[in-house]
Length: 254
Image (tube, rainbow, N blue to C red; front, top):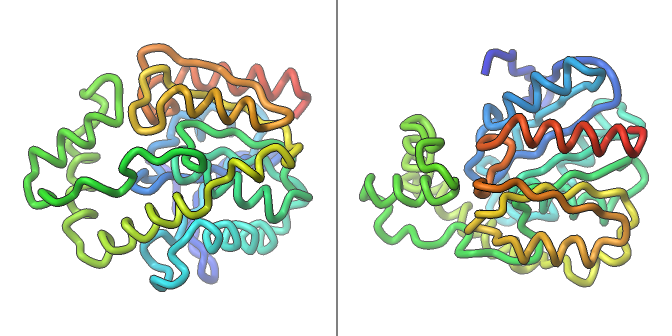
């Protein structure tokens, strides 16, 4: 990703464009580059795209949970002096966006979730007993996508490195437990923020019925499907993802 990573105080982030901020929240093993297409597209049409590097592996183990990450996001928004933001999260990032919106709804103008945790976890962070076997990890990385070719060697290497780093593995498992503990089924009906749900029809990590449940529980949400697409729609079907989101933002006058 050809964008400069800014480093200020305890924050590391990418910031491109001008306009209402879209804050992008990456997942557990998703790098900032997963959102390259989103960054290029929306920064060119009047939005400021901001991608903070979430402290998933740098917080103390006691603070390695969804609530702490939501608080970190709140502090980052305050630090940047943003009056209102649009949050866009994939996987764990969607869960952090939802939990942040529950705790700090005032500045959240809209929420976009794709393949989000928060209601259902399919062995998130589990199944790493054979973590030293590169082919096993490669298969797990490929299973995230409808088209296994999307899982480039770079992506597989990153996942392999993460699960074979003992400190990162312990934190990955702590986050997985935290995601289950911070189930949001009871909270969602009280959350009035306009929400755009974009989901891969072939997502095996958070299957389609999870998207349907999010849509039923959230009072002001719309659900959009992308066919032949897995858990990371913004990577696997970037053009469709961007079109759906842009049309929704226009319709809502954001």
